[in-house]
Image (cartoon, rainbow, N blue to C red; front, side):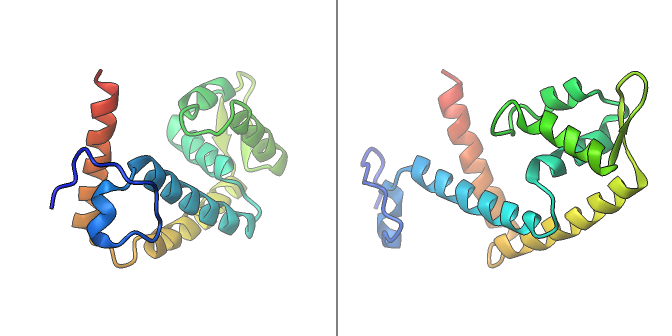
Length: 155
């Protein structure tokens, strides 16, 4: 039964046969909130934040990026314009990132160790989140979401 054009009120307990009428905004938002909260709670247990993780990764891949360049590159994923500059400051104070005279950032040895611990945590969590979901199902879900984004932004 195709329910295209029919819109139901968000119901986290909807039966499978009623899911086609459920609002994507609710479900994508609920998933985002659940995953981000779970990740941030786990990261707090090792005294890091998600913006610090993004920053470490970007600095490591960036070959001498400045604070402004890292901030600009992470603007789309940060919750506020202050998250990444704050993370840079925290990582500098912690000694995980250093800045040269020109303000180019690089990871220190301690930063690489921290990044490795966070990567291990995130990799384990990814396995937990993806449990019971095949790679094919995951790719199909992402393709659908990407198509929906395109449907909205193409106009």
